[in-house]
Image 1: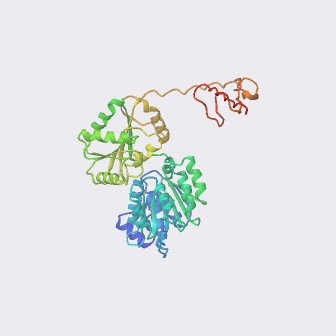
Image 2 (image 1 turned 90 degrees about the horizontal axis):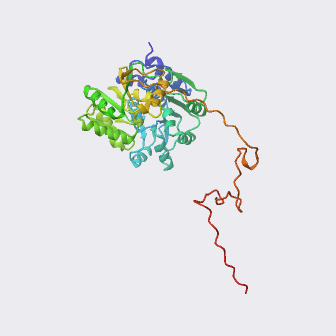
Image 3 (image 1 turned 120 degrees about the horizontal axis):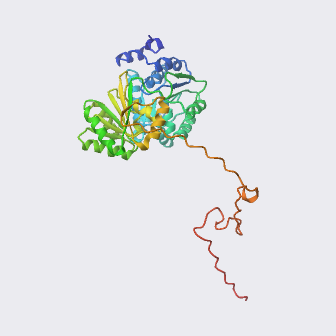
Length: 439
């Protein structure tokens, strides 16, 4: 059996791991850590809840401990990028536990918090900065942080960063980070864009894959409840009321829908809170703390929280609404069955969401067993439309058999102003100009 001491970590880190009761490395940690310590770029693929943070965090701390110099003012020695505030905070908590009893400083840069306070903290220099791309660029534009000295770059949950539209931000940031660097990219799935991103940012990387992309955790019991939209809320209330001791995470598709569902659950006498993009950072942190402590046992969330909640006690995940992006189902249910525990994931499927369910089942490679209602018949594939024959020759008609539009005296089509702007309604007649009489 592999142990952390077998991976080559220094004694300071081993004492820290023993203090935090880290006993046996997970597969992604056992595979990735030796390559990172060896200075290789790493492309890590593993499902959520498998310990990816320690897979890059521990060897990162190991290498920084060996660097005697302190970061200069505003400078950063290592940069970790993550897509959401919740995930940044989660990574930072883990990293702070790893640097216990060392002089290393962990910084955080996220939206929704005071940027002036972040500017002040960064002014003293930071060993490891964990940040969301948007807020980091805000700080760069204020000249509050210098990334040129960074020797390590980590992209965590890179697939979600692409889903959230951060590709251009990532390209800008990568040019600012020192080019003589070690880069690690970790992702739960491997879409085409991630492959392209790895080719762009990684140099001769080692690919570490401990489970097929899209595969859900083995200890999660999954099922689906086919329901009418009008009955869905009451069925959820009944399910949550029947198990009052468990921590349950409920996913909705929109911010308004999540807030409305939370208020409905509270009205039904259930202790619920919500977390979504319309909440301030303070509200989100208070909701998560209350949920983590068990004071609030139901948390209603949008996909903003799908990869940012690391609470081992979550026993149930309810997909009240199926996600727009099928791969997000994997990340949602990955919030349960963490730290070696088992969990249950229940999806609700209304008639108008059946296509989304089929997409989810395609991603996870299985048909979800039904615990209620009847599965609709799968739609037959649409027949292929016969190709349209092109008529006419060529010329001004473009070969489509239509008359070419006549042009006005300025070269624009009739009824259209020069420059491509169409008039609303028929062309107006010009008012004849009165000629001045000859002097």
